Image (tube, rainbow, N blue to C red; front, side, top):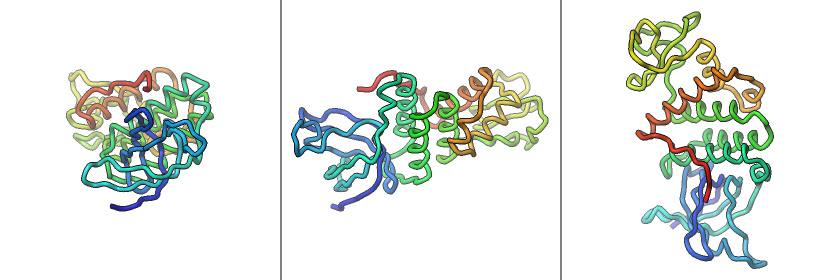
Length: 246
């Protein structure tokens, strides 16, 4: 039994009893953890209050390896995001971020750059009007950090450089991009040169820089199909986009 102190973002929560919650966090030092927050729903002066979804917090929990459900003993909000409660588009964008973080990661696998990416993306979404490009950047960078992003610079079959190429196709089976010659007549998802360049840029740029990029609708849709295709491969199932949060 160990006391663990770390920074965390609340990804998901559910009721445990009339007075307590179970919360899934992504933490800076311990990756994804689930913890029981006893008494968090009590309305008392001494109560620390409930844990809010999306909140950036400092938490202390007792690690219980036998059950996988740890005990949250202390929690302090470092920052919340009131913009998500006021704007439905920002709210669902933030839901998408925490849903992906929850589903793409295993409990106990720490990844500090991913923690930073989650937090930076939530901060950016709370400020920007251009949520789509920030979401595409988050998806591509999360896939890259977790090892699921395909090679974007060259054909996975023949190694041909995509620079100056008329485009490429995404091959789920090959988990990468194929040049038009290698793809042949196969019915695969086409990617224009502009989409390939945009994907490479978003996968390696800061959220602030990405926010300045304005994508044509067609390119945005190509990137969305690419990232969701990679996510489905990683999860081995279709991604059910969250439209509400309990």
